[in-house]
Length: 306
Image 1 (cartoon, rainbow, N blue to C red):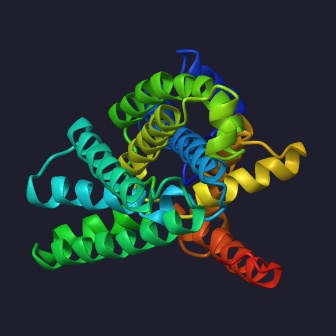
Image 2: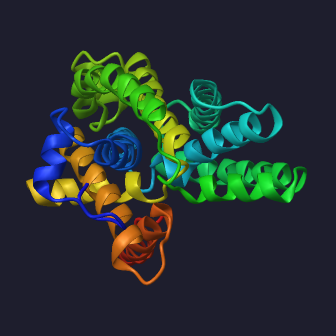
């Protein structure tokens, strides 16, 4: 909040946040930096919790929205809303949620065969992610270069377009969805034991799984609509949170906090610590891609690669 082309002192920031700042300081804080900082934290929080839900429920570290195509479905629908329909704001969020939900339900229906296989779920999701990527590229080729360039920046994952209205919309949706998700998260412990065991201890397996999928999709969709499909945040947040807390469960709240930290630090680094400014999605990919490679190599060595 204090770092930038126009640096602020902590005193100036405090005065601005308490309603005593100058017109210039208020513009810098409320119109430029606060929306970006808050949007980044909430987006990271949503991606982190969403990733932890899918990883725990499917019992596979690869089962995160950005890997299995949920984010790609949200992106395809959002790009259609932006480029074809010319929509903005809440309407784009609605399209993103619809696209993510359709892909998630399609993956679930195709992967379910008397039970849920984690690797079947992941492989079908990766295939549908490729289809969604093709649809996005097709849409990009059908519009003017200027419009395609705008969409490309969004698809990379960027907080540069954060606004006060977008911040408020995202925060309001997160305030509603996240508490419900944390309450529903109590079912994850049973689902991690397998369908038969979960049923034997009183968990309504199908109903619980569908609700958790819906909540995880909702979190990924609103985050994607706000900042684009910021890659690998959902993927790395859960494992990092579990290592930090020493736990083996879903760790939804720690995963969300780790996600907020990852997005915040990556965005700050992309703005101020590198020779050129880079979108946050590029920095998170630099963090997440090596971990994905490590995980795949480790799974293959352990003989659990599917």
